[in-house]
Amino acid sequence: TLSPYGVHQKHGQISNQRRQFSNTYISVEMDDATGVAVMKMKRPPVNSLNLELLTEFAISLEKLEIDRGCRGVILTSAIPKIFSAGLDITEMCGKNADHYGEFWRALQEMWLKLYGSNMVTIAAINGSSPAGGCLLAVSCDYRIMADNKKYTIGLNETQLGIVAPFWFKDIMTDTIGHRATERSLELGMLYSPTDALKIGLVDEVVAEDKVLSTASAVMAQWFAVPDHARQLTKSMMRKPNLDRLVTHREADIKNFVSFISRDSIQKSLQIYMEMLKKKGS
Ligand SMILES: CCCCCCCCCC/C=C\CC(=O)SCCNC(=O)CCNC(=O)[C@H](O)C(C)(C)COP(=O)(O)OP(=O)(O)OC[C@H]1O[C@@H](n2cnc3c(N)ncnc32)[C@H](O)[C@@H]1OP(=O)(O)O
Image 1: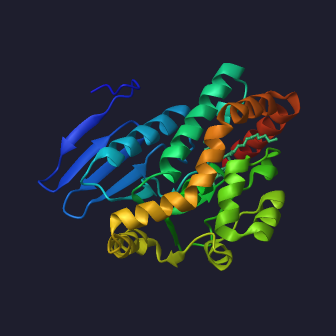
Image 2 (image 1 turned 30 degrees about the horizontal axis):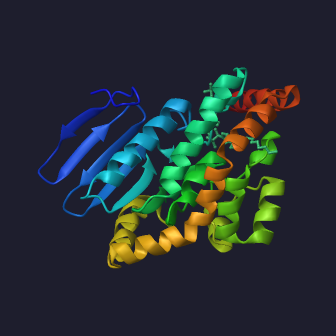
């Protein structure tokens, strides 16, 4: 079927209790018996967040939000060793202002839906999660990361010569505190799972093969609290950050477009992409 946003979706029934829907880059398995949906990003090689993935992400969340049977979402990756490499740098390089604006609006939309969700959201971080990948995780209610010192998480934007916008910074501050955020963002720090746990960037570190089962167990604990009370509390905690972006949404897009269009920023991103490609070859 074609959704109102023009994204093709495949629907399938895999049992009486489980429903599945899948787009190009997102697959969702909804378990009606538990009320839990597992949402997986599947954009090889590194789940970088391009316009299409962000749009599918927002639509999938919206569908789950209006599904009365769904109380919680586990966000994870179908790609081994990678949760998400963050924003697709090629969406921010060598394109025109209209494209940059459309891309940023899609990112904002996805974030407003994820951070503002009434459902319990748990990030099952089964791989590296820099920059935009970290934003996804920090926007959830709870974070469980696989215990593998090769994986890293953090807002490393300054290392690319770019700057995490105020709404990334706000939720990072709410998660790890002002001083840790200041240092972390200025230096563009990426943390191992153990160090991320120490500063409170993730809530639990577990063996790689236990990430999903731990997420399900944590979900059951959160479900023990009456939904209406938990939802009102979440909304009270998150409303100021949500309102701030909604109020300044157009200005934020304008800032992004003018910042990213600068020759010096384009050059920094190109150098970073070349460095990534060289490393891979
Ligand atoms: C005044 C204020 C104004 C505000 C202005 C706002 C400014 C913008 C703010 C933007 C906010 C967020 C930014 C981001 O999210 S930028 C993305 C940052 N991400 C990273 O730095 C991660 C980069 N990638 C890696 O470190 C590694 O790839 C990995 C994730 C650890 C995986 O390592 P790997 O060894 O398994 O894979 P690798 O060989 O490196 O990569 C495979 C191929 O994928 C390409 N690639 C990797 N990451 C990205 C990416 N983010 N976007 C696009 N492409 C990516 C990589 O180049 C390889 O390609 P190829 O196979 O060589 O062709």
